[in-house]
Image (cartoon, rainbow, N blue to C red; front, top):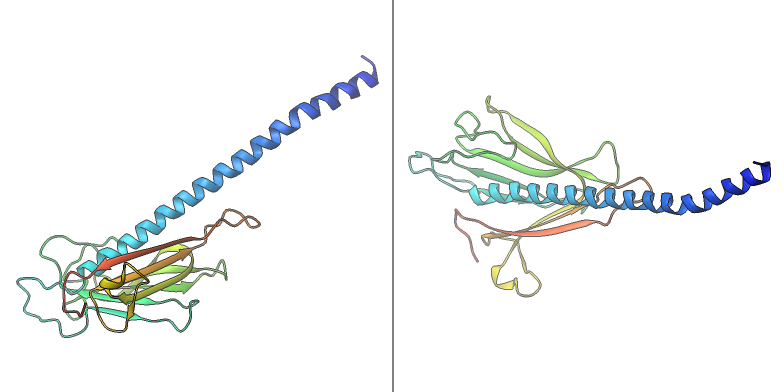
Length: 216
């Protein structure tokens, strides 16, 4: 085979093979983006479920408890900016049946502060990415000391408010006092690649307070 024939065959092969190879590469990238977003959405759902469970347990008083709750069982701490984010502090009696805190530890008498189980959710700066933050969970260890762990990364903002139930059909009306209904909005930026960020995931969940007094 002559040199010209070899060059011609090589050129034709390149023309025929490059488009399918490029298309396959794009398909694989797109599939990776879908999988990453799906996993991130699952993590967002799991984090909101942890907060929801803690809110629903807040203010619970055991039937055998000799201690009465004299402080607010739910405290919403508003951040100075959207960057700092809001925080929420939740306390309750140890349940009669087995319960768990946001870090997966069983709620026991050892893990209390002033005979109350304690949980706090808040944002903390992300050391690896200055654009995002980490959603943190704080609870009590067996020595009665506060400890914390990360439950979600790549968080853009966390907004927590009391809202009035009768306003949910329209624009939710934010209340400065306890209403028994809390709105939590979590915004997360999935990281697909350095030059190809995915669309922001934003989810709002409304959680009803099961225990305690409130003004609807």
